[in-house]
Every structure is written in structure tokens, then in C-alpha cells.
Length: 386
Image 1 (spheres, rainbow, N blue to C red):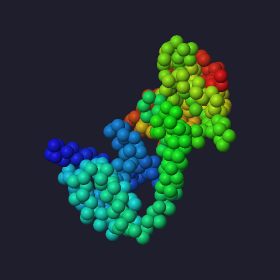
Image 2: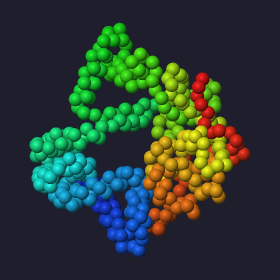
Image 3: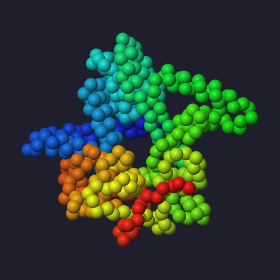
Image 4: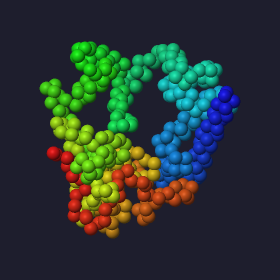
């Protein structure tokens, strides 16, 4: 089994190293080309897309992998050698790289590289992560406060949708705040008493959700626009088809919509027929009105560049065929994040990657196909207000 694990690690190294070498070679070729600085920057930015479309990875995954490989190869030669020989795998290399990012001094990185491989090849990834955390705290003990302040500046909230209509709500905050929240949840969960049939964890989850969705008076306090698609049959109670988020990131039972009736969230309900078709909306001006902008965002869900998962609400609404030749309509509008909007060619509906390979600009939509343009006078979005 050890031999198999080492062979798998060597295969990972070959893939990571090959992608890094390809990226370096492409960057050098682009830098040597007779192009403007802006054009060079645009082509270099598309290298990750080139690799991603060839390997089934997102641009973000490719960029992170290249960053880790480049950093470890340049600053931690013993770790990179151990990876090449299969003594450690990509998961452990990633943990070590994360530790390197925490360190402020080059000599600290050198010390980590000298000591970490022996531990990494004989312990689990979880154990290695704890070891690296302790090493960073000890080797640069005088910088604990500075690192903590740097991390506190990164505090954030993320939502991760998973299976069966459920999601994780992750809050990155200081340990002091998290500990206080944890203690409050425990105390108030116990206060419900033995007659409450919910488990302790169910009580904690319901309390946290209530704190975030109601005000001090206990009244609904959500203000947001959210879109779901639902079949006409499910809406009428004929079948049990689920509701589906506009970007395809989550699903849930159709009946759960009724649970939101008391909130002030504005749910956009896109009703589909038995064939899964929705309606298009056409507007003669250059700039789409708000209802069309939202409809396009809800229809496509994410940036329409290959592999990009930037939510459409954070994107530009772009004409596929430039205005005025192209209409401001559902058929001709799509969301592109600002970076891909700037990279997009305006003459053809495809992406020309640095290698010369052509990738179709159209991607598989999360939402159902649009209907014939004869229905253009209808609005795509209908509001759930009943």
C-alpha cells in the first residue's frame, strides 16, 4: 500500500509540475511577443483558463495550484524534492505551503523546509496541519500579534450549499468572538428545557438562524432578492418536483417556499412548463431595465466564461453581439465578470486561448432553455408575493 501511495503522489507531482512548466513557458512566450502591455496581461490571465478547460478545473483551482507549486519549488526545495519522489502527496504540500504563507521571514521558511518533511511523511494531513500551526507560532513568536491582526482583517461569511436542500453558513472571525457565540448558544439551547424534542445541535442551529433572520422584536428582518425555478405542476401540487436555485447551486422541496411567507425576502419565482422552458424579454434600448437585468442574472446564475463561477449578481450584463447590431434582449445578454468582460472578443462567440485552441463561449446553462422570441413581450421574472 505504501508503494501505491507513493506512486499516486509521484503522479500528482508530474501533473502539478507539468502545469507549472507549461504556465512558465507560456508566460515567457507572451512576454517575448510583440504585444502591448495590456494585451500581454490579458493573455497571461487566460493561461489558467487554458489549463482549466483541459483538466476540468476552475480557474481559481488552477491559479491556487500554480501558486503553491511555484512557491514551494522556489522557497522549499526539500519539500519539492520529497513531493517529486512521492514521499509526500499534494494534500501535504498544500498544508506546508499554507504554513509558509503565514511566516514573515525567509529564515523561518528555510527552517520549516528542513524539518517538516520527516514529520509529514509519517503523519496524517490533519496531524501535519496542527504541527505546522504550532511550528509557525513557535518560530516567530514575536509576530503572533501581527499575524492575528492580519487574519482579523480577513473576517468574512461564506455560504456553501450541499445536498438535500441544506447549506453550511461559515463565519470566519476571531476565536474570542467565536468562543462567546459558542457559550451563548449552549446556554440558550439548554434554556428550552427537557420538553423540547429537538437535539442540542438542532436547537443551536435554529437559534443561530433566528438571530440572523429576525430583529430584536422577533420580527422577520431579511431583505434580499433570491430566485428559484419551479415547475407549474409542482406549484399546483400535482407532483413533487423540487425548487432549484437560479445558479443551480442548491435545491429543496417545493413546499419550503411557504416557510418564507412571513419574511420580507423578495423571492423571484421563475415558472417553467413541462418542457422546462421559460420566457425571454426583449428591450430596444442599449441598457436593460432592472427587471431584465435581474432576469438575465437569475437565468444564467454565474459568469458565462468557461469554468468561471463568479455569481451573476456580481457580473456585468454584456451584449454577446455588440449593440446596436445586437438587441438588448434575453437572447443576446449574458453575465460576464469584469475580468472576462474585458477579455472577451467582440466579433465572435468563442474564446481564443493562448495555445490557439478555440473554446465555445456558450456554456451549459443551469436553468431551462429559453422559449421562442415570439414571447419577448413577457417578463421572465415573476414575483412570489402570495
